[in-house]
Figure 1 (cartoon, rainbow, N blue to C red):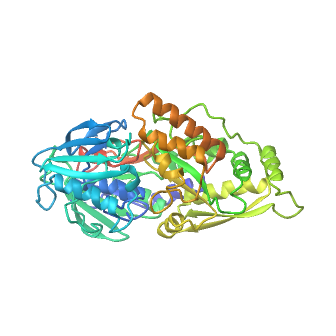
Figure 2 (cartoon, helix red, strand yellow):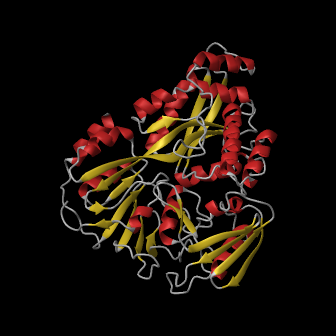
Figure 3 (tube, rainbow, N blue to C red):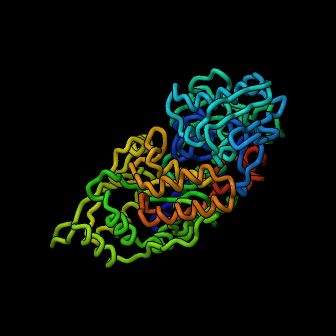
Amino acid sequence: MKRWVFLIAVASLFSCSHPALPPDTVAIGMETDPAALDPRYAADAASVNVCKLIYAGLFRRDAKMEMRPWLAESVAQKNPLTYRIRIRPGIRFHDGRPLTSADVRYTIESILSGKQGASPVKSSLGEVVSVETPDPLTVEVRLKKPFAPFIRNLTFGIVPEGSGDLSAHPVGAGPFRFASRERGKELALARHEGYFLKKPSLAGVLFKVVPDETVRLLELKKGNIHIVTSPITPAVLPWLEQQEGITVMRKPGTNVAYLGFNMKDKYLSDARVRRAIAHAIDREAITRHLLKGLAEKTETVIAPVNPFHEPNLAPHEYDPALAMRLLDEAGLTAREGKPRMTLEYKTSKNQLRRKIAEVIAEYLGKVGIAVRIKSFEWGAFYGDIKTGNFQMFSLTWVGVDDPDVMHFMFHSKSLPPDGANRGGYANPALDALLAKGQTEADVAKRKRIYGEAQRIAAEDLPYVTLWTQVNVAAVDRRVKGFEVYPDESFDALETASVQNGER
């Protein structure tokens, strides 16, 4: 409430004039600078979403998360191990080079080789034996064994053959081309005049890096920024909804917030401790009061909007008495005036994430778990998480689509840099299910396999899944045709437009 009042007070100091932006350009306020502008190495949400505007993939997901061809004209499965993909003719990269099967082959092979660095995309390709190019528009990929999610995972951007790391000078075939960048401040994209689909109405997109949310929203009010998306602190939504010329959009998302654990830790390696933590946190109260209904608690990383979501999981209800019994069973008995144990909780400096950490720490304190919160700038924080330098942390999985992502998260062989099993979790029963899910092509059977996988994960708790996010965007009403996607992508900018002048 205090922050809402502060926003109102500060906003009154600003006029409603709109400083000039280049005509037909949309400005987007971002909390963090994209870490990588090469689709093979993009892992954080900011990088992935910007790359999807610069680069085109063979396939992409629409606003309903349905798969659609993009660069691909057609795909055929010759046998369980071989895929033949036909590329649309006449496509060119931003620098004028024609996009051919050789570029697709190079992109895949460079991801698999890891010669230029580990790619988070690698595990999504399965075990590729060969990539052949029978002609300039045909690619044949042969796998070592069946891999059901293969086609659904061909959404990463295609880069020109021979490319090194493109983060400094991106070259893709997407609707917008790289124009300029001032690290930590702004990134400018311009319309790709030779885009192979309908040319965008927007002349450009300007991403402004504004770490402070209050400043981002005031810049939105002034007209210097057209769009601000999640994270938006729920407490400021009433103020936003009262602003003339601004529309607040909401849509159920695929993003799932979770607590991650280091399985090598002397406390957190015990499943009873992890279950105690789950029962000690009142997620219902947090989603209702702190998140203002912009989240719904869940027991799995596969969000309810995903057709592979398993709804019949035993919930970890708020039960501090049970939490304390579990801690007693784990040998962490209560001692008068002293905590049962102390955990270090790492998070970013984002104000909402910091507040969530404080609330969770308060709940854990009530059952005898002391928490030291350590917050870092995004780059340092994410670097620690990727290298396993943590005891406990909170993050959000963004854009989860195919349930094979659970292999990337939890399989014992998916340790960094080849996967995101950063806590070092190992469960042979879950490993077996996740391996089976990769080879099962029948959708109904895959649903049963991943339903059981979600049940095991919900019982063993390598993560405590907290809630699934309702995506929110505050949009200047001069922007037409923008919509919020479940995975928070900016893909709608390809067909959006902006009206110049007063709103």
